[in-house]
Image (cartoon, rainbow, N blue to C red; front, side, top):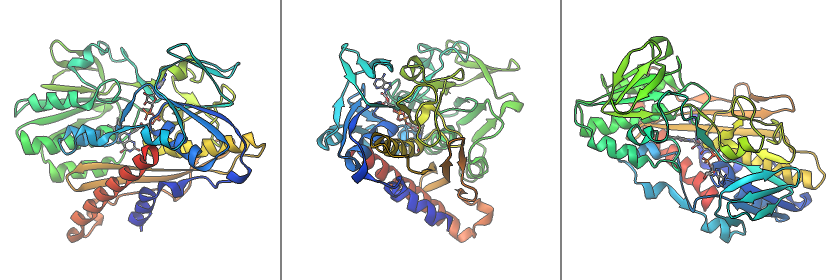
Length: 427
Ligand SMILES: Cc1cc2nc3c(=O)[nH]c(=O)nc-3n(C[C@H](O)[C@H](O)[C@H](O)COP(=O)(O)OP(=O)(O)OC[C@H]3O[C@@H](n4cnc5c(N)ncnc54)[C@H](O)[C@@H]3O)c2cc1C
């Protein structure tokens, strides 16, 4: 039952769209900043469903490499080209695609300024600019340090291949050291999928090696499932330490290839992957959309900024808990925001707000796990619909003869999800 619900959500994200009223939708100019999961989904959804909307997508890069499936590139089970996409088809569908950086937003005059100083006017602005890393939040961890100790967390800043090359050069018997931040951060299960996929590579290529993960938290998404799988697939290879076991890293020393924990322990690694604390991307903060937390508060029904009118913020940049910062969530925000904008331009009330998320994780070859949630927005809050969620069953609850098949199917559903969401963005 759980599996079929997940499979349905994964295979057909368009089903998870707000009810459309395109016939009565209004006309107007929508400008979208950021052509990632939130922005590309918004552009495609607006173009396909609301012919009265004039849609401009502004994205600084010509090619977009997804974070999802990056951990499989790290493990050598995918190549970078297979997770990299262009905007040609979106343009062919009638989206005006502009490859430039947005340097400023003038909310009073409803215009955005581009790097070449051109100005683009809008009736409604959508921002899905993703995240920035908080350089210096871990002492000594700045952009220069990230060359020695890669983050591999924002493909536009650093391709995952940088970390992959270090992993390939690591001697058998070396320690792959990873530091993981406190919540909130991009992709709550992502670091643990990364541990799994690094273990998958090491088991095949460097079986005497070890992974040490130092975590600023005491628990994490799908923890029992990940830990069951590590024991089953990679026995003795993974050591995870939470905050109360001195897992919080305070400073790094790239020259000495070591990190220092809260209680002063120095831990060395042959490869060190630092996933630093994060915040909403610069353009969102500079436009006055973020609060003191560094993230952007939004209205739960429309994803309009709670601070600046007529700007809708999507995806990782937002404060949208209990939804996780995931690509699926960003795409779900996008559809609702676009439907609300179309309704508002026509002088109609916003449609009811339902949001969806499935986070799949690859834990080994042909071994997938997932967590699903359905959420509802009311004017006051965003809540998970009671009883809507689901998580993969633990090993102990599965008949031993069916376990492998179950995990294999989830890995397959993950592939299906990835194909369909990237097709919705770039197809
Ligand atoms: C290792 C890893 C694995 C993950 N796996 C999954 C997964 O399996 N499933 C899942 O759902 N999610 C996953 N995620 C999370 C997912 O990648 C993010 O949640 C998603 O990318 C957020 O979408 P977004 O639109 O907010 O930002 P992004 O997708 O990062 O898009 C932001 C875009 O805005 C552009 N931009 C920013 N500022 C400007 C500017 N000033 N001018 C012009 N353009 C600008 C950027 O170039 C970028 O292309 C994973 C993340 C990581 C790190």
